Image (tube, rainbow, N blue to C red; front, side):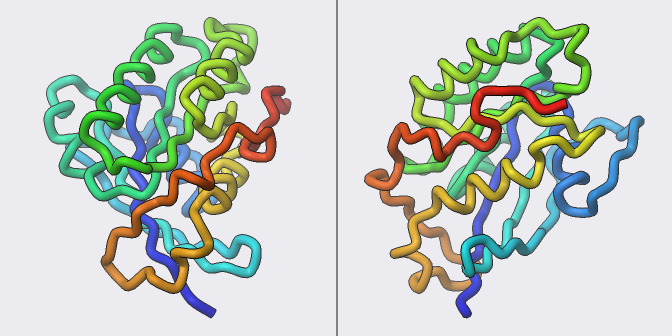
Length: 202
């Protein structure tokens, strides 16, 4: 069985929970008081999806504005990117659109995009409607999930959905350390891309 190395980058404002999502995915742990990421951190996780093995090389970037200029170092050549916002902070959702524009200018031309509305467990404090985020994700042909790193809601599904969007025809071409271009033909607005179907799990 082949193993595919997949470079994946997490982007988004400070405090939205990027590092917590990575920690939940990689180690199935949650730490309520994670320190802010400086520059970027790197972790790996191997995932078996539909009998294919994917080794995610995950770059978790810092959200502070002073590190913004460093982001291209980490998302260039990435096969996928997760842009994270906090469902309780509307401003972090507006920032998603800025990241999408930047990725379209400077990222890989056929990068698989995913948008994650994190902290879905804090529904009482919600400022971003699920439908608004889902509609935007549909408009830009991106995967959409509402996640909770605290409760683990939809975190594994998020990465599974990304793996399923990577083209199987390129699987045999993936060599260790290489970057695989994503075939845009497999990116379509099918509801199967959604890992939470536009509804929130509690």
